[in-house]
Image 1 (cartoon, helix red, strand yellow):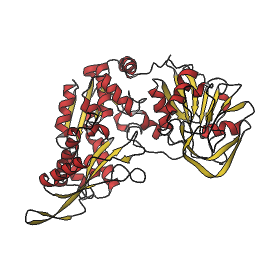
Image 2 (cartoon, helix red, strand yellow):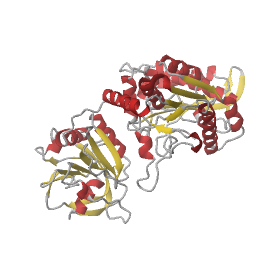
Image 3 (cartoon, rainbow, N blue to C red):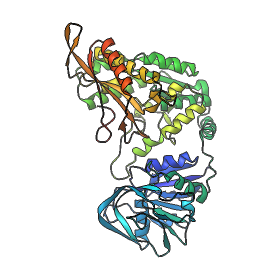
Image 4 (cartoon, rainbow, N blue to C red):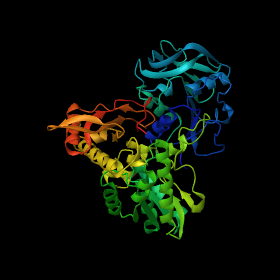
Length: 514
């Protein structure tokens, strides 16, 4: 039996954070659409209801039959979840006219209630709602209040049910993780057996049973997800795994060679395919970012399929799909957050079964599994890199010369990040979620080198901090680091005479420029 917490998603932007916080408590959880509660699952030990972009009074608001789980399992409602539980059981939820948003403090809380065990006086929480609860069900009582919100938290006297109008999952709720621990571990009685080691052990056993002696093909990208997926499969089936690594010509400098060496060092059976000629030819003269992406995606499938067909006895296609890819590809509110290339199924002509060993893992868990598999640290800690590569970091059309310029500039930037030591002894690279260089090839900048005027391209450096890439802030890089990088790029990279730094956050900007 693998214990699990069910998180019912009502469309909140922070539902994934709830899941990650539960996993950080070494407890497995599953995020499901609000109307897909699993009936008669013996592994379920508790239920969490997420927030939502809707008011409970909206005609389109998501509603669920609470009798499916209330009274049967411990239940925690968060924000909209708390309001819906009150609304559905005779309480009142009213519009305040203003949003209750931002930091607040628990002026009063019941320190004898198990949900608030260990809480400090005046604990900071994060509010984000337009409606507020003005009356709670008859069988409930208040267990926490802020200066402006009387029913900041309440609990049932008859069922194991708790509800909070703040968001314990976000960083700004300073004891939010403790609240979730109190619910998951103390109330739901989690044994806290979910770990990277247990995942590797159970998944390798499952893969051996699922795949038997069948041949499996995996497309490698050089990124963390596909690399961990390959290493896990290799441990399970060894020589029956064939990996294909396609070089579309827009990887980082020397990346194809470096990654191939790293993979071979892991004992993987890897076929490297240099298809750069095809990609550059098909991208010639194309400037629209979406067209670039589609051409690269189409060409990648064509090249990969051509190689895969040479392995005539293959029965499975493995993919490094991770849990956020699947969650974000579910339409909860009617809008899919993103259409992920790993979630759309297989091309019809491939006639292979799909194998996704990482489909339950969050990104930080993938990295923990990588460490458990004793993979090289540089592979595990690699920043996310776009599938189309440098093509979406070059504004305008793509040429080999522009790729060369960007590769040189980016190589200097990233290597300096690896080599810059922060006060805690780690590298600057490890303090940043993602970094990269953008070539503004549609712009030329006037400069002076020696006694000559130059008319060359500027580059923009980008670095962001983030937890999950859904939101991101620009990284405050040290001035001495930026000065050194700028000086070296301008002096060493022919074609660049100006270096800028992008200080835009997401939202409203995106991490990538295209």
